[in-house]
Image (cartoon, rainbow, N blue to C red; front, side):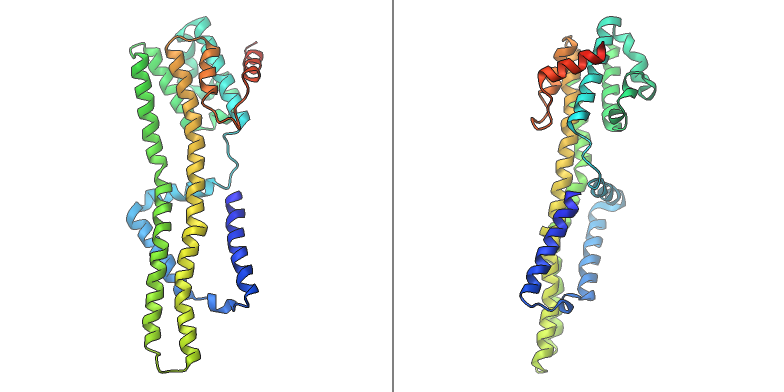
Length: 285
């Protein structure tokens, strides 16, 4: 929501400042410039990214309208859930985890934490890694490398919308110049006519440059940054699972495993050790 608020503030302040200078808003309504910028931007986006990445980018941008799911409560739920799973493995052996990782949606532990079950990436990452641990054929070092490879691959795919938004944003000033040059070409054909008509033509040409720069730095750059920050939050959430699983594979105690995960959380949303210990043990009891 703050993305929308910020962009509205950008446009609002620019329009207000323009009005304070006594600007004529009718001059800014240049449909031909909108067509050039919009069509060129969309065409370059499709040419560079294809339809699949375009859908992924639209999904990432619309996802910014939803609240950030990686809150302190989400991390608390994650730590409690992993503690319970590791505790079962300590009491019943690794085979006690099999029914939970094979069908997480029916697990009486995972299914309690709706915020985790709703996160398909996190659920698949946790369950797939635990299945590997259950085989007993992978060393902790190899498991760590496997998880790192998995996360790097997922991050590379998730980064594509950010790269696409940055690329289009970088191209917008250039397309604005193209629109302005076309306007200047038209203006040159009017040289010798009335000065007022030539002035209007030059003003119309400059609207393209104005819009290109405004869209680049006032719309696409903030959206790309916001998507990137959301991806960073998701990556941190997955890294919590990674460090806990690596500690579990090494044979550490359940509380040590979740402590490794807790230390990976940003201080702004990280639960304190005493808070975490109290929460996981109360739930386990």
